[in-house]
Amino acid sequence: MQNPTNDAVAAKIAALEGGVGAMLTSSGQAANFYAVFNICEAGDHLVCSSTIYGGTFNLFSVTLKKLGIDCTFIDADAPDEEIEKAFRPNTKCLFGEIISNPSINVLDIEKFARIAHKHGVPLIVDNTFATPINCRPFEWGADIVTHSTTKYMDGHATCVGGAIVDSGNFDWMAHADKFPGLTTPDESYHGLTYAKAFGKMAYITKATAQLMRDLGSIQSPENAFLLNLGLETLHLRMQRHCENAQQVAEWLEAQPKVKWVNYCGLKSSKYYELAQKYLPNGSCGVIAFGLEGTREDAIRFMDHLQLACIVTHVADARTCVLHPASHTHRQLTDEQLKEAGVAPDLIRLSVGIENVNDIIADLQQAMGTI
Ligand SMILES: *Cc1c(COP(=O)(O)O)cnc(C)c1O
Image 1: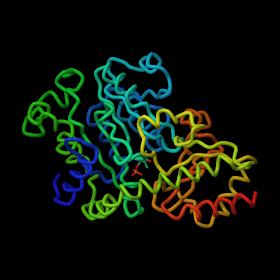
Image 2 (image 1 turned 30 degrees about the horizontal axis):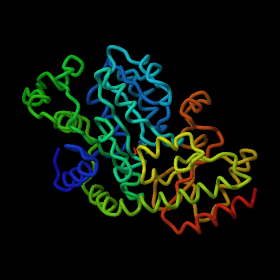
Image 3 (image 1 turned 120 degrees about the horizontal axis):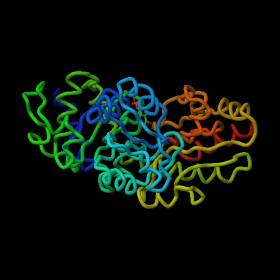
């Protein structure tokens, strides 16, 4: 449950987010699973934005269901009343991604926090794409933040990892009936009641002392050491990712062979206003766009890229590209794809920190082949 390297890196991530404590996990999947499982058990329910990472969508819709935990997916852009209809007496949390992977929608965190708190449950925000350099969800009312550190935080595809950060702000005792795991004694942990014994550290202490102890998924200290190297340059890389992505998005938007571009730094984006509010210094390096023409044209374009690699990975220092409908989201039906905000022609371009002229030149020559 403790290792000096992991503890130092967790403390650094907690400080970056402005939280009271953090726990490192072996993957982002483990982080999101533990974040929910720490307060949900069989018979419970959660509400979640439908535009989230495919792996998390599957975890919540299929695997949690097998554990007796139900999830209702909602349109994050819907008005309060619409979203509130999904809440039940046994709902234990609301979940969303600050910038959704791969559709690049921006979450209205204040709206989500308002709805969650009105129903006496915490808001959990996956902050993987923005990182605390560009957004600190706790400042907008989120209670718990999760990360796939595999992405920008590591930045170099050296290791898979995750983190959960606790703001310490959610008052578990005020909703004691909803969260017995935190507000009644844990016989397997010295008969302590987490919310009484650990105060603001209750949630993160339970996650470590109970879930990590029993289920594992710890981050290897060697990986935490490598993650720390990434964290030391995160502020420089994020700035460059955002500068490059803004230029690439503007260039793409001006191309006749490009059908649509979604990047929240573009004035044409549906999420421009929300991005100005929550991500004033930039969002991330990831752009979603679609090409004119057939599916074969999109494949030809991707095959001709020389600098950008076709990889499932995203949010890396090197530019990479993916067609989710045939990769990360291939387990979803067409209906679920649409629900997850993934158009069949969506190309996810993860703009790296190379010279932006080289990135654009590569896109230009590949586009010339279609
Ligand atoms: C990749 C990703 C995850 C899952 O993280 P892994 O480290 O790959 O397990 C969760 N959330 C988001 C937003 C992601 O991009």
